[in-house]
Image (cartoon, rainbow, N blue to C red; front, top):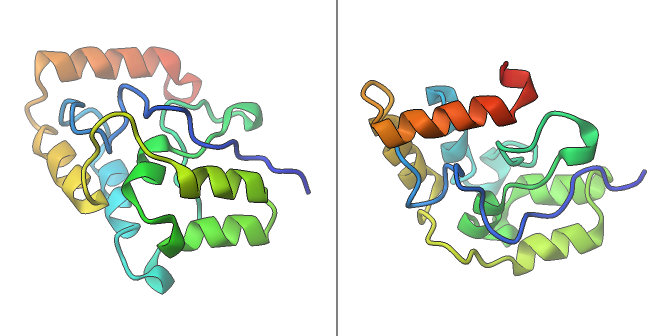
Length: 143
């Protein structure tokens, strides 16, 4: 089976929930909760790769989230191990995640990113509302 999930982008998307400079409250609460689950001990983590929120849901555009790759230690990610074993990613993509360093500041954990993001859910700033609008135009599945 060929790799179906591409390596992370060179930099996390401008709306990546792992980025320190992204406004709070642009994703749904349950999306932020997903970030926390990858902080767990390896056996307790989700077995699925965390994919870029900006990628559309079509197979050709799926990519590993660059913020996820930059925030978490690839040696401890169950999803990364499982993806290689079941053929969703190839060894080169695994290595791209292992070698990834973000050019922009990221939160130190999924929980830190989620805490930040969830703070703005009830009162998003004007900047957050603009980003939400931009995301809704980019993602076909959100229309």
